[in-house]
Figure 1 (cartoon, one colour):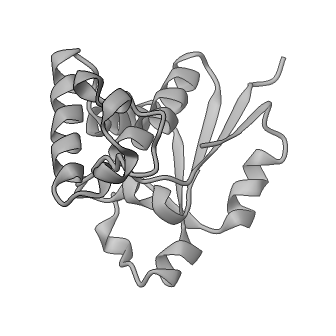
Figure 2 (cartoon, rainbow, N blue to C red; figure 1 turned 30 degrees about the vertical axis):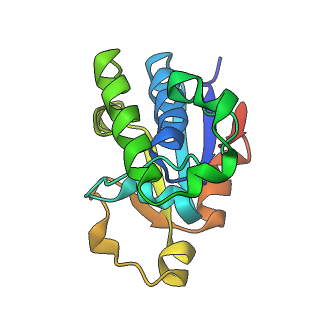
Length: 159
């Protein structure tokens, strides 16, 4: 029986959206899957050496709000200056209180488990990013680099 493969595409770069690709990748690797994650557009933020991720409550109606705010606080209120900082702080506090691994820890676990992480070169060029701002353990490439792996993966997910 051949090795199972998981191909993920990570397109979002906020604190709350950092968890799904790293949790799925590390879990699949622990289960014996060969895993490759393609980080493109805003998902590329998850590969920066300096992880300064935030939560954006604006436009995220599924986000559980503290104190039942989702029931009485208008969605427009999430655009008030300082809300992003407040919500990011609250999310980080909840993650720590519940004993959930940090994004950094999950990313390190993926590196240790030999999850292949591809940073999208086109996105780096498009947004005038510098390759030295990203962790050393990644490969830079384009969609064709990812498709070499994803074309025969057992599971393909877009996150």
